[in-house]
Length: 457
Image (cartoon, rainbow, N blue to C red):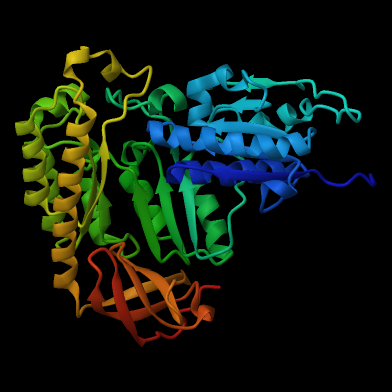
């Protein structure tokens, strides 16, 4: 048996739930290959910065982080620094230019991660010897068949798990970089997904989120997304099922029926609207109108009256007029979303929207002003909704210790966050909490009962 110490790896993730899941996947692949996963870059031989490319701000944060790591790398020249994920796919070999990065790997390359790392790492230079640039590698091919079937993620302990069922996207929304960095839609086998979730349930996981770029477009042989959702909800031990991020066009009567009829499926739906203007939606290539979007909302609410709705909104898309922005505010007021993720349009090189005429781009100060007005409307609606819910008693899954002394934090089935007095030993259990007050975005509550057999671990 080799007496060589195990190599140590650290994965630092930025971005969406899919990126978090990819980070767990890379950790699982590395651990299976003999690496020890550590909790800080200072303790690692390999540091992987797992990235997002959706907005420029996210990329700037990563570049700043790489600069910080370069100081650590100067102290330890044999350390390997890699940039993985969507930003790596988008920027490619340009990230290798100044020697701070040894490995660039896109989202379809993770299966080959151990082999790629085995060829990297420069020998430590002799004293006073100037460090020479070591081997560098870019793994950027998009693989039409890669859906990471058969590989196991390294999940954090706890009652909840992200379960990717789909990678890539077949939509070509003109603002979005995802199809160009993650490739076309690739779905996993339904049976493999169910086998994975059964295994998670056996370890004590009771709360699962199905992940995909347009998750509700999922198909595998004769499995539709609604059929898969029902099957997941019926796995023994699974108490809560969520999914994100769906596309409005694939919100079907069958999907709504599954949500309404399966007890484990939570009463929450993320429904990205992006804009309240038909003209802007058409230029975004969203393939629905405001009217058809509102029809979807009505279909969902008629079957699930207590549903909590969230959305994504982009303001200042090229060509958006003041009147079209006001139409977006009107949509917000008409639907009254429980929550909304709001953004100012961010140009992404390679997307069709960046090729629109220069005079159509909204000035930064105008775009920022629109974003601030949108946030004000969103906060006002959210606060009104949450104030109306004070006094309700909700089932809460306790997730972690809250900031307030003696408090713990949990989440309701409608994805509302509640802080309440409790013992940290309650983490990973379910309980009943009365919502006593709200800050506007979150609730403060009081535990009123702890059902028998609430523990899940």
